[in-house]
Image (cartoon, rainbow, N blue to C red; front, side, top):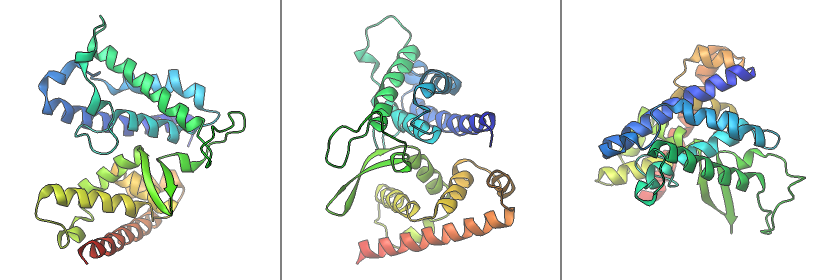
Amino acid sequence: MNGKNVLKQLYSEFARYYHAERQAWVAARPERRDWAPHNPRRLFNLVVRAIRPAYRNCLSDWHIFSAAYATLGFADGRGFPGLFATFDPSRYHGRLPLADHFVGVFKKRLRARLAKLRYAKTDSGRQGHKGKFQANVGLGLVREQRHAGHRKRTDPGLEEVVVAAVVRSGVVEAVVAAYVGPTPATRQRLLVEAVREALGCLDADERSVVRMTYWGGESARSIGAKLNITHKTVGRRHERAIAKLRAYIQAELRGIAA
């Protein structure tokens, strides 16, 4: 995929996310209507034109936009709190419109987040060597710290968007029904946690198909054209991925219920 098509795909996904989360954010409190830009193109162009050039030699577009998603967060405050959960205009006493202030805060926080990715610390806690740092996929969607064999989530990014899209699709919800508690909040929490963990167990090609299907909203033929495989192969990968998700989630929830 050439550079222009990559940006087109990135914008399509970013715009879909931004419109949905901003709409939910404003619905919760109508006075927020003018707190953030109405058009996602403004933030997208900021990332592409003002921030991306400084990091392209050491971070991929996937890393950069993962950080952008994490910086904005979700309207309901789930996951790592981003601007949609923490933006507070009462603390601002400048003369700029609030939407301009929102953009400025977004830019500042995104740069700080990317700096942490770019100059990640070593396992011993020392600052990484800036000249020798190379991008690693492990620094992409989710940065993790390992303690005594356990994983600790530290920075959710685009992965959280994919998790939310899979949950909304309902493809795994039936598996959860027999194991969750009586309240909707408990049901949603367990479902989100189970999907998040299960996605990490898929192969890379399966994750790509899941992401493009449930977040990208693409057809099997469209996915096949981008991955250079047939739509039938896409269908088989999708079926295999969903079967794995359901089996993993079922096993996890059985353990909880035991």
